[in-house]
Image (cartoon, rainbow, N blue to C red; front, side):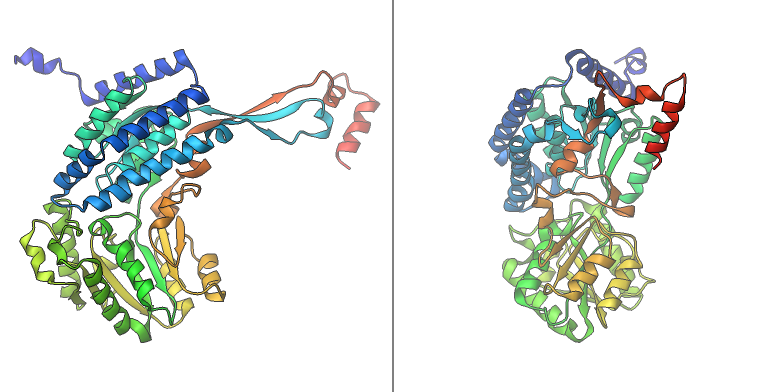
Length: 475
């Protein structure tokens, strides 16, 4: 390769801009796809995804070093397939124009909203669920009639290769394209909408870059999602649900329970149950097939630094489950860990924990628990375990979070008819449900004026009849 060859290679920004221009020109040329075309695309997408289940499981396992294939199938493949089924089933209703009220003086006309594709949607997806969090925004954008540019995380190259192959077989580049390269350049493109999933810090940078072109954004940013266990509810079913939510994918889930708030009289019982039920869930310990490793050494180091910092400031660190010491036998694998005595001078009290570490805090009464949650940034999710009574109602009314699961963890994300997204520091905008379709559509308001309307009586030249009509309107 000569120096001239090097200097004439397009930059990432130029390459991305060319793809965007090509997709936008195709959208302007072809217009909005029909209901049948969108359903056909969704059906082909589903078939291709199911056919590649084995490839996806193997690729994610390679990217993580070790990840449970059952977790990959459940949270990645099944999640997207069910989302496609939901969109396919409801798409006619979502696309149907909605009629709106019309004022008395214009009654011979009509009002309606038509949901128009935005054009080209950009998607930036993270490494922790590299299929689900890449493809759910993509299929939602397709259902809404858009073209899509997807930029996944560079930390999952094997998974990216499977997705790139699948998408290139399903769609021409002018409809759906997957790219790699400079994230900042991608965020700066003049998309018609940009969907980002990742950290709050990077989300701020993405939003700032998008603002140069006034690009609307959907940000799903995570945060510290609390789990409140009502007094008297430290039961096996409750703690088992917390084990599931916390240790799913090794704790690397944006909506994982970040910490638990347990009545101060029941902390010992909670820890004992948590240890016992971790052993039940993972009988082969942290090197078993069902237990997922941390994505890489860097993320593993972040987690061990959080533990070391907490220990140095006086926290009590308890490794739980079968043979936690065996974790050292598998690269970047961290044993399930409980942390007690966490104080505000510890990093673990403020930083999102993207791993199998569960701080446990005691509270005196439900007001104490609510105050603790409200003293911190608004989380992506909140979990409450307790009866349907005044305390549950107080938690729901007095806390603000992206979503809530009552008497369970994580599975609100699997409810396709519910919107999913954050609030405040945990994000903005929604996808899933009809809200996702409408996020990636333009609700164009259309007024069709009738042959007769009373507002013509309010035009110049004005006279006594005008004054009479004004008095009627201002009565």
